[in-house]
Image (cartoon, rainbow, N blue to C red):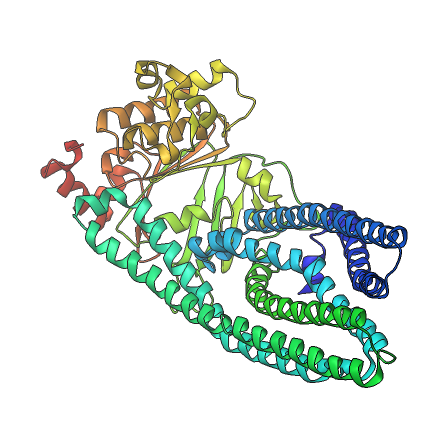
Length: 581
């Protein structure tokens, strides 16, 4: 665990080391101050001259200022080191997630990943801050103060032999009792964040079904569970204060009572008033340091859970990796499936795809039809290697997709999903996700192909129109056309439209397909659709059923040999479904 996170310190090693040195200096000076204060008290009692008193007072002031400087330096450097450490942890986790395949991401919920990148990183930052400051300061203070107290007070320091074990044992017990509640909070944070995410994403559905009250109750329940666990833990931790007060008062009474008897009986030869005042100060330093150690223990235990959750992400190995000598050029847009079967997980009982054999020539147009769960989307996700086939091989440009550099392969394949995402920013910025170096002319040409140019120019700011997060200020059809234009800017060898014209009318759909045929004839076009009209003129149509290719051929061929295709066609044409949109 520590080895994993120590790698995240990197460029912040120097401020980390300097913080530790500053803390040592601060503790050393603080322990010496009571020792010098003892001389000042004794000097006053013995009638020391004013010049000597001023000299001792000036020394104490200088020591206090030096201690303050050490403390301030430790605080500044510690803050810089901990903030930088947290930045590196967050960056490493985020970059790791970016390298995950869909299979890896499926193991973590989105809400859980958000919690890890926010709440968990925050706890780990606090743990790092405590480690380089309080976790060093408190043990050193206990050791130095105990040595100084024993040196001055002798047998009077035996009070610490009683107080330290009682306080330390009590604080440890309190912390251990509070831990189960703290651990349970993180799982409940995930559930609460999941509730928030679902509610925000599905706000239109929530309002459409008038389920606001239900969502409020669900969120309130999640919040109440977290508050309950925190309250339980904090109630236990609150016992620190009375225990601390008891030990402090016992220490004070013992030192004053026994010390006073020793002064009287020995006439000040064994111990004097100045040494008793120093003993009281050392006692407070020791007890406060033990109190801080107990809080560090609680915080470190909470942070340990966060560290474990973050390490799960950092040590998760991407299931898809580049080969040793990857191919970086995709020859053409031909696609071949050779005996392909696929499961989403090893524990799955049934195949999502089974025994798929298929050849798609480069530059052809392929339509895919089938019911929900028939394997349409799964089939095309194997082409850009979003998943790897469980059995068999998928070839692009005559090469197994596992031979390619993943980035090179995906740059040659553009996918447009039914629920594709637009990011906050201008239309122009969103389009350049497809090609950051695209010229304005290229942007406009891609938008004309996608039938988006006309509605973009209808906006007052045209291509500089701001898109809200998720594209909420454009219609579903407009969003799909912008996503198609973005995909076209990649100038791909293979273009996959996964039901991505479902929100546009049939006339616009036909114009988009006609544009593809005229302007990108060499690009292989794979179109998943619900409407037969969207794929009727394709070079090859696949009918998927139960993870298998039930039939394939042209429209005319399938009308003769495929009952499923003929039934879909007749339902849509006779029922007028093809013109509804």
